[in-house]
Image 1 (tube, rainbow, N blue to C red):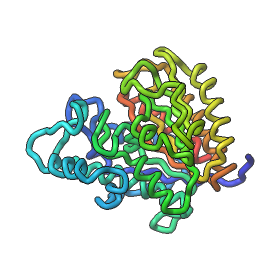
Image 2: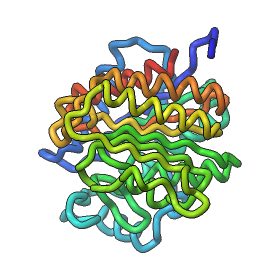
Image 3: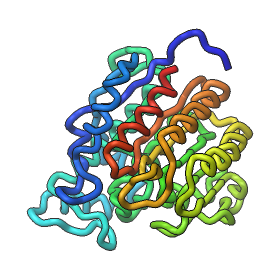
Image 4: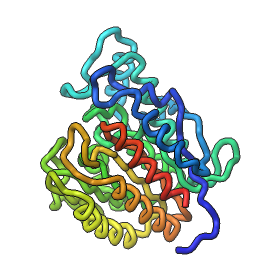
Length: 320
């Protein structure tokens, strides 16, 4: 599809998003956003820089159960770390408030692309929230470094805007189980996930294609450890066909950078070209089907150079 103008892409950046991190020595540190921002600045792209926004508790409760939200609030004010799941997602001081900014900024990204303008009235077609895409969190528990599932909240909010048919694409090395299982029987949520297997959380088999009326609306594509760009491009061709056939009204991309070679906790071998390719294809499909409505969420990634390179490629693809 030919376009003669540069797409205006909103990128969320601010110290409030850096607050979401689990302390010294943890893979998910508070420096991740700065690694991305430093790399992005070298490109001198025409982007709209957005201040992080916070989500209110009522909105978070549209997806998460009250008892779990109360646990996070209690842990947030505690002087000691409290496990928010079975052990791999510890709490930290002000974790509730930090995660409110993650969710709130994703919702602000959604609001901007739906309305075509940000809160300041600037034109916006696409948006990227780097510290977001917490795809493991379930309605009643944290999981895999994810406290609140901003994706799940955004899907519910999009439906309130009247957007029914949504395509969610996940290229993080880990399967997006917190999105898949919570919407497994939703026939209007078209889910496509390319991930490493075996790997945490041990889900996302090819045979899992949705339940009931939603059967056939879910596409899980596990790749073996060591898979690189060639394997990814072949898999993504199927994702492209899947999303194109769905004709969605909104596309959400979770673009975790932990699928790049050199990540300390995964074994895939992509280069940043994989993320650029995925974003380019989905950008084109967004203009074909969604009036350009696409948001990207950073997801995982624990090699700082990879974070900068992969996420910058996503923003570059959106901005063209």
